[in-house]
Length: 307
Image (cartoon, rainbow, N blue to C red; front, side):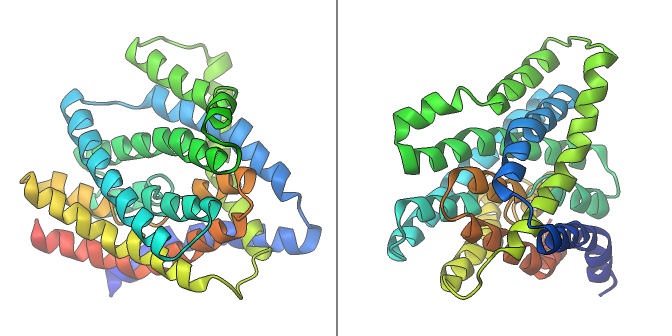
């Protein structure tokens, strides 16, 4: 019970405080949500991705193994979500959001604090979480954006449009400069840090503003299926992979817990920019985050017992 209250107060609580601020601002001032989405996609996200990848410290062995785990894990989630999406007879755009909600999870402003709390700052456990965060960021701002654009404009136009996005170049620059160990001047690093620090707060505030505009009267059954895939089936699939490849100890615990995170806030942000069903994406993120207060705590408990 004490651990549950600790997670609720130190991880879930701050997230909902930021969302509440966005909710109140939207009710009072009627914010321009498309403009907020553009600020997130074209300004904050490139800076956040660049800063995270430029400063990341990777071990080749850890990086390769964890990335392989998440490639298999996300591929299985894609198949499961697609099957459910077809069974639920969604249109192409909505099915893409449904699938993305299963594949993209909150490894950053949710996953990192959970990891730090569970493993008490253990650097090895945190390195696994950083690799998970890196993989999710790369995948979300590449395939995630491409899939939503392709659902509306076709694959070729979506691909051409993606090459015009600054996120791609922030991602490539962060990786390349990290690998080549290029020392950047403070003139660049300080603004990059400012932008990265603003990303999480603005994304959560934007989500809160989206929540204020949501109409909750329709489509809830689809949201329940999304939550089931992300919060229950996801960790179960991760558990199977862990047992198949015979992982144990901190590695198994960290991967299992990372797999249980709720749907990524950024999935709702990119849906606001590229989809006609952004309210559907925002509902999934909201209810996924709420439900995760129970499911993540249970997964942490299981991880300690099983490994």
